[in-house]
Image (cartoon, rainbow, N blue to C red; front, side, top):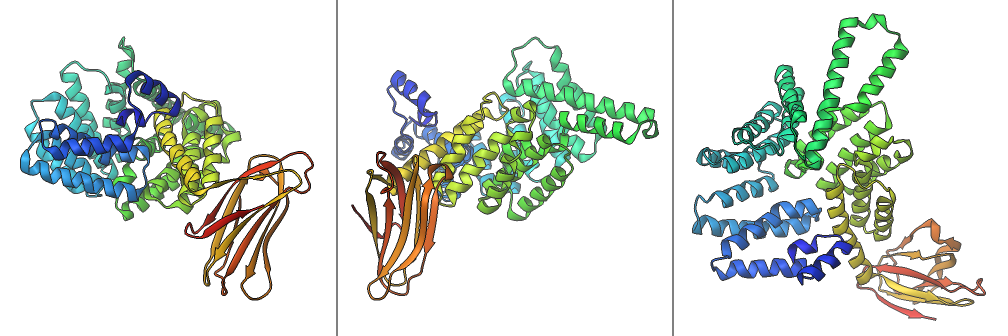
Length: 508
C-alpha cells in the first residue's frame, strides 16, 4: 500500500490490479504503526520503515513542513523505544542520524555516524552507507575537503569488494568537493578515478552514465584551460576568447553542479540552520551571476528556487521559479535535459499551492507535463513530487471548490452571509469561453457597494481572484455569474469562497 501510493495514477491502477493493494498511504502508515505498537516480532521492522518514511521519504515527496514535523515526532517516539529495546542497534542508530539531520542538528548526526563507523569497519556494505551519509551531511556544513574524503572513502570500500555501481558518481562527487576546496591534485585524481570506469564493460545506471559524461566534460574543460595557459591570453582576440569561454561554460559548470547536488539530489537545505541556508543561497546567487547563457542561469535559478521551497519561503520561491520558467524559449536541448526547467515548474506549482492558489498550481503542473522531455536528469524526483502535489491539488478542489453551471441566457448567484468585521476572498476559474461577473456587497442597512465587475472574462485569462473587507457592517456578498449574452452555450466554472466557515448558498 505504501509503495503503490507513491506511484503516478496510471501506474497505480496497474500496480493495484496486479497486487490487490489500492495505494492508500494513510492506511499503510496506520497499519505500520499498529504493527509497531503491538510489539510483536515484526515491530522493529515496522518501526524502521516508519522512521524511514517520516525522515527521508516525506522530504523526498515534498511534504510541507507542518506535516513533516508531525511525522518527525512519530520518528522520535519510535527511536526512543528502540534505544530502550535494542540499544546500540546499527539500523536504528543510522536512522537516528537521519532524524538528527532532519532536525537540523548536523553536528549531532555526524557524531552518531562516527560512533557507528567504528563498529562497522569490517562490514563493507554498512561502512559504505555510513561514508556516503557522512559525505552528504558534511556537504550541508560546507566542509568541502571532509566531504570529498568521505565520498572517496565510500569508493574505496566498494573497490575493496569488487563492486562498481555508484563508484563513478561518488568519484565525481569527491572531485567536485576537492575542486571547491581548492585541492586541485586530489580533484584531478578523483576525476581520473571516475573516468577510468569508462573502460569497464557494464550496464551503468542512469546516474552513473550521467556522471561518466560529466567527467568527460570536466576533463575537456581542464584540457582547454591548460592549452589556453600554454598559448597565452595575448595570442587570441577578445571575441575568440569570449566564444571559447562561453562554449566551455555551457559544457561544464563544476561549482553549480556541486550546489545542484547539495540542494536537489541530497535536499541539503532541509538540514541547514537558517543562517547556513542564507549563506548557501548567497553562494548560489554569486555563481548564477557568472553564467553567460540561459542554460546556466536556469540551473542557478532552479537551485535557488528549490532551496526556497525546502525552506518554505514561498514568495521568494515563486519569483525565482517564475524567472527560471521564463527562460524556456532560450534553452538549448541540452539545457532542457538538465531537468532545471522541470524543477522550476515544480517549485512554481508548490509555491502557488502553498499560497492558496490551487488553480495556478494546476496550471504550472500542466505546463510541467507539456515540456515533452521525459529523460531529463531529475525525472524520478520530479515525477514523485508532482504526483504528490497533484493529489493535494485534487483534494483541494474536491473539498473547497463548488461546481457552478450557468445555462445560456441566464445567470447564477452565490450569496455569502458576512458578519460584522469579516473579510472575504473569492476566486474562480472558467472551463471555456467567456462570462460576465460582478461582486456586490449589500449591508443590512445602507447602500450596496460594487466590489468587482468583469465583462466577457475569458477562460484563457486563468483564475480570477478578488478580496474585500473587513466590512464594518454585517450584510451579504452577492457574486453574480451572468451568461445572458450567450444564446446557445452554457458555461461551467469552479468557485471558492474564503474563509471556509462562511455560509454560502446558490441562487438562480
